[in-house]
Amino acid sequence: VIGYSLEGRPIKALKISDNPNSNEPGEGDAVFVALHHAREWISVEMGLYLADELLGRYATDPEIQADVNNLQIWVVPVVNPDGYEYSWTDERYWRKNRRGGVGVDTNRNFGYGWGGEGSSDAPEDENYRGEAAFSEPESATVRDFVLAHPELVAHLDLHSYGQLVLY
Image: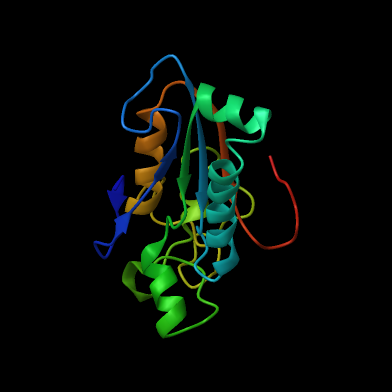
């Protein structure tokens, strides 16, 4: 458990490493975060598929074995558990977290470029960025987790809309 959502649900990370029970400061960290947008259910499976491939092919694939042996790989399969739950029980195409019943797009709540193009200051909009950068516990959890791993070599957010790679 790396943090908690607005409604108190745990945000969990899976560590994949040759020594998963210890911190190895000499190794870089790779972080994969899924399900910012609650309706993108398949992004959870993308993160779990990545973990399954790394674990399942570790013994037979030298490249995967080298990555697992030389990195601390983290998969956060559900960073927006409140919105995810709501999309299963109440509104299938819900996108945001559950702040105030209208929600905040946790993917637009980060500090870098906060308030810029592609976000909205109107709470009713699907890309509402929130009151301030990192105002949401979900995005603050990702920030704090990344800051706690200063040897970050990769961070990738997994989404399922548009079949694009954006950087």
